[in-house]
Length: 230
Image 1 (cartoon, rainbow, N blue to C red):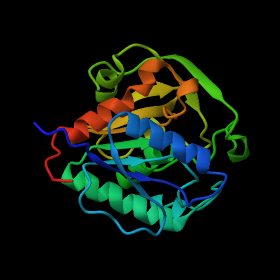
Image 2: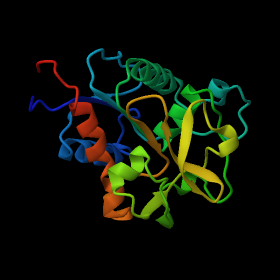
Image 3: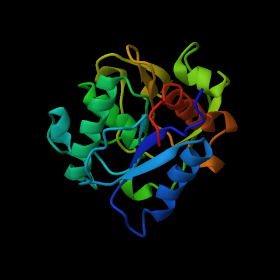
């Protein structure tokens, strides 16, 4: 058995003073769970030797990526779209564990040929620091998310103005949390561990302790087949 920390690629928005604190929250959550991080920004080359992929939150995905006209997209970075879509496709093809958070959740849906609701009333981009809280959120029994969090009802946060519904859900994805007709978590049924959550578990003060366990479950799954020397 190896004690090597799994190499996790973490995708992030372009570095800026505005994004500094949010980027650090992802780093802290994954490193505390035992990950050896490779931070990737738009335009960076794709790594070839990762054990897991975490797609983080951020701006909207270009609507053309899912075959629709732009009616409400904001903060689009086409270089980031290209990097994350390519990474997600490669990870799914290789059966590498993937965790998608907020925008990352939406990236996974687009990669699986799903689409997005471009604007949910009451969720505006300029209100991202505001908090919409969901309490007593039920998780589908037997799902990877339920195993990761212990299956108890969760308290989670919401900071997204774009969303996935059952009608826009991508191929092979199974909804594991639905709140107010919006899919808030899903997983890919035919891969070892591909999980997406629309909320932000890295904002530890805003979610229940059970919801934070997703990072440990993800890193542990990535470590399970880590054999390459570091």
